[in-house]
Figure 1 (cartoon, each protein chain N blue to C red):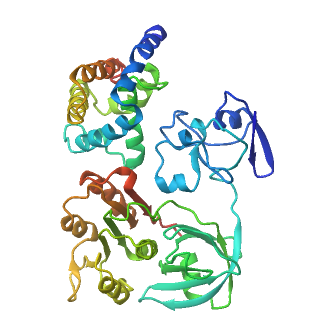
Figure 2 (tube, each protein chain N blue to C red):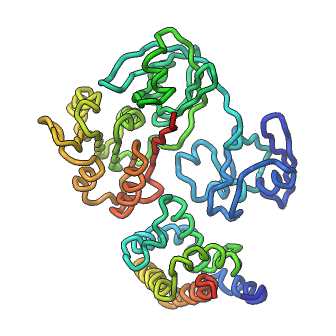
Length: 133
Length: 323
């Protein structure tokens, strides 16, 4: 992703973060989401770090990003952070599973469908970086 | 511009700088990684003023209460005195006043101080021998009880420090004690909340402190204590806990034995499995886990999956220092 795109995204989606409810919304979503992920045998091995507090902090960063909230993640950060998982076989099917849980979490929290679609689009834009392509 | 003080040194923090950036610019050796508030590597502590709320985002309530904050998220509003995690510790000399066995391998050690020792029940300190050998032990009593600290010391075969405490130290001997550390303690809030305490071996020490503290604050929600070991002979304070359970309707004590021989009055099974099968839903509960590191990792996850919020799960893994 270029810097220009990054900036456009930040400007456009800052309001999504606010519309969706800011940090309290992130906190509510993270725990629901992480329970779903840990219970999903397709992907839980990628999240099964022994330090749960750190894992939850990472999920919080993910949701803040997906809501277009304040974050400084670059495409390169995403690549670096997931490179060891790609080596262990992380692929599109796993990314799809995470996207599923992202949507169902937001549905459970009664987030309107159009906002869910916006959040999903932002998360989707990180797919190639996460998968190291 | 505000001033940051660490020990004897003062550092300037410019208006647009975070505490972390200011310290790094002035070549202070502080650990950090993400600079985004995610990894918690740069957590430090304010010794004078409460840090700005934004710098405590995502930290547990007990850490917030002790003025811990993330240096990378902190734009200081006023001068601050800061303690780095690896900064040398201040030790106070105490005197051993009780040195008795609690069971066949656990020593009750009580250390008295001239002045009040400030701590929260459930925290730990470092004990230090005259030659500098140092080990961490959890405090088992509450601060309301005179100027003493109580410890439960299990004898580890070949463990230099525990053998010294078991075999050599006597009533009247001096011993150096660090400032209290750790964030596994009770905060008197949400008194109707359920509390789950799970410990193995001397994991009972911090849990007993937390339990006493919660009861003393009139905690009204159910409190379950599961204490486990392989054999009944390695549990202790059994009668005291049973007595407490009789005095307090909301307190339940479940001693668990994982070995084959299970005397009457004890539950058979591993303490974590018994706790999880007893309590079906932990939504809204506060959880304290102390003892064996593997038990703790597994229980953190399981109690979270059973509904406890991660902010309400407090853990203190007892790591054994070899020799």
